[in-house]
Length: 266
Image (cartoon, rainbow, N blue to C red; front, side, top):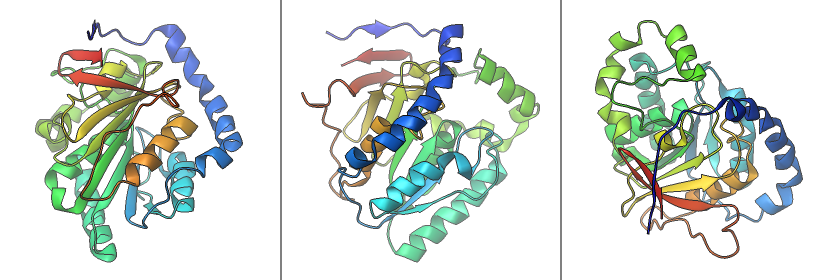
């Protein structure tokens, strides 16, 4: 029987433990041989979107890894991610169409943290151009008032004093609703930025949640997360299957059934 979980803000200890992202970076270096055992890519384009107040440098290791598997991994090339902005989304729409036309196929989108909200919005606006969406610790399931009572929430509001007036904030159905394409929400219970329940979706035939161990800040370098991303991207465009949590990898992964009011373990 599944057990409903109460949503609590990250504790001070969890926030302080975000520093372990440095350990995840180190673990990535020592896991290269294992990571190269992931399924190889078919060369289709993958657009990788950074998190709040970070730029393409934060996703460089992830893009290099995907490139080594045979994908055409692209940065977003829009500087630092300032938060939800209609002008940023418009620029990403153009980039998505360009990549799809250049490669004559659909584009997979990987979004870390707030970048995942853009990934979901793009999939709803241009589902014919999007192959699948993968989010990493993305708080798309935030309360209806859009307020996150945490240090990162206050930081976001400080950098975005006029965010309530931005057109994209009034279109929250673009990123709150599950994508109309196959999607995987990768998250960590140890998230020290926002409650992990904000980053899970209701599960259906093409939507899944996958838990890994680690920090929010380290998800783009977390070897276990990167392997899962490679596994998902290797699926054919017309035959998506949920990630298999078998006896060999149960220590590293766990599936979660999400809802709009919390989450429960399957």
